[in-house]
Amino acid sequence: MVIEDMLELGVAAMLPVYEGGNVTRLIASDGTEMVDSRTCRTVLKYFARLFGIDLSAVRKSYGKAINKRHAVPIPFGANMILVPVKIRKNPLGENDGTFGYVNFKEVLRIDGENCNFSHITLKCGKTVDILSSRSTMLEYMKNARLVESLYMQRHFYGASAECKGASFSSPIGQEQDVLREGRDNLRFIKEKGLLGENLQDQDDLLRIYLLELLVKVLLQHKDDKNPR
Image (cartoon, rainbow, N blue to C red; front, side, top):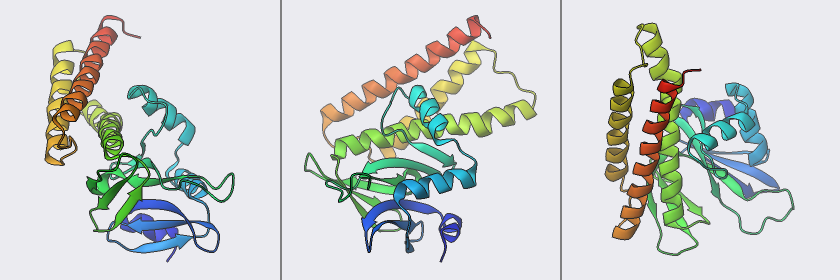
């Protein structure tokens, strides 16, 4: 099996491992696994070339949109949004890397009570041990959901509307779109159990999310008043 076969099956995770060297273990959507002799960083760059993506530009663009500088989810497509996750604590080599990537679209559940560790269960049934707390991973999932919404808006909804000759210049229409998106996002977060069981954590996450949504509405109104 070659790495292009994994892309066809759907990438669920890519993890740095030491197996005869610093290599990458890939898990497909159906649970199939393979090892690529290249590092995780190199495999990610290879994916970027295949998809025609500028990793630096994508990180900067979506990081700015969700107000994050680190652990920015990378959208390769509607069904492949890779979230950076810490896998290694003490890499053997200085440049071996500590991060792997989990496809947000393939995450089924996040478990863990320890403040430094958590476990991701993929839809295929495979599990991935993460060196980050469950609350941190829930935050990463929320960010990935926001990136997914932005990606879909930029690459699908916007293009579809342009083809139909629709106009997005109305502030009321924009606000309704944003609020509709917000309701869908909150429903997704609740259905997936991404809010956690702690009530304070739920309140904090919802408050952060709603503030981000409010900022998005205000920025859209500002753009309406000050067209470029």
